[in-house]
Length: 282
Image (cartoon, rainbow, N blue to C red; front, side, top):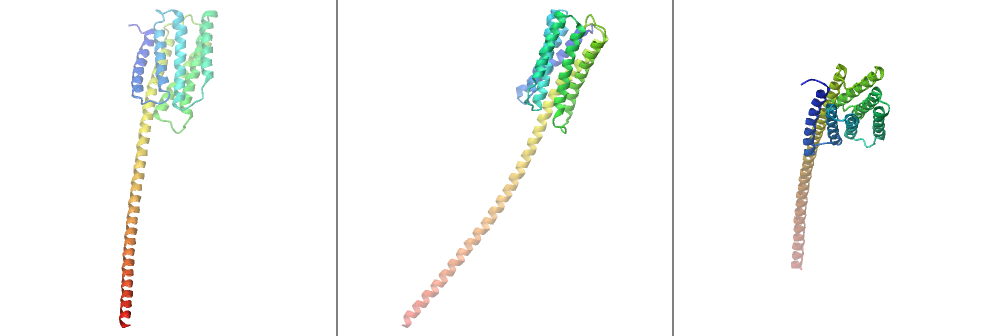
C-alpha cells in the first residue's frame, strides 16, 4: 500500500471512528457533561471529511472540495461549541456561524468563478485557525486556577491545530500557486499528519475531560457525604446530650415533687393531730 495523502487521511478517519464508538458508549451510560454530544458529532463530521479526502480521486471534485470543506468547518465549529458548553457558557457566537457561511461562499467563488487555489486554501485555513484558537481559549479562559491535566492537554491540542492552520494560510499566501493542493508533496503530507494527530488528540482530550470531571465530582460528592456524616454524628451527640440533660431535669423534677408531696403530707398530718388533741381537751 502506497503511503499517499489518501492513506494518511483514511488512517485518522478510522481512529476518529473508534473514538466516536467510545464516545457513544459514554453517552449511553449518561455519564457525560454539556458539550460532549457536540464533540461526538464533530468527530463524526471529521471522519466524513477525512474519508472524502481519501476518496478524492473516486468521488466528484465538487463533493470532495465543497462538501468536504463544509463538513470539516461544521466539525470544527462543534468542537468550539462543545468547549463553550463544557465551560458553562450560554452566549451564542453568531459570528462563527456567519463566518463559516462566508468561508463556504469564498470556497465556491474561488472554485467556480475565480479558480485561485491559493486564495481558497488561505480563506479556509484562516477560519479554521481562528476556530481552533478560540476553542483553546474557551477551555482556558475561566477558572484560571483550574488548569488540570486534561484541560491543559486538550487546549494545547486545539492551540497547536490552530497554529498549523495559520502556518498553512501564511505558506499558501506567500508561496507561488500550486496546480494541485493535494499533490503528494512532503509539505502536504507533513501538514496532514500534524492535523490528523492534533484532531485525534482533541478527540482523546474530550474523553479525558469528561472522565476527569466525573472523578472530580465523585470526590466532591464523597467529601460532601463525609461532611454530612460528620454533621449527623455531631447532631446525634448533641441530641444525646440534650436527652441526658432532659432526663436529669425530669429526675430532679420528680424528686422535687416527691419531696414536696412528702412535706405536705407531714404538715397535714401534724395539723390534723393537733386538732384532734385540742378537741379532746375541750
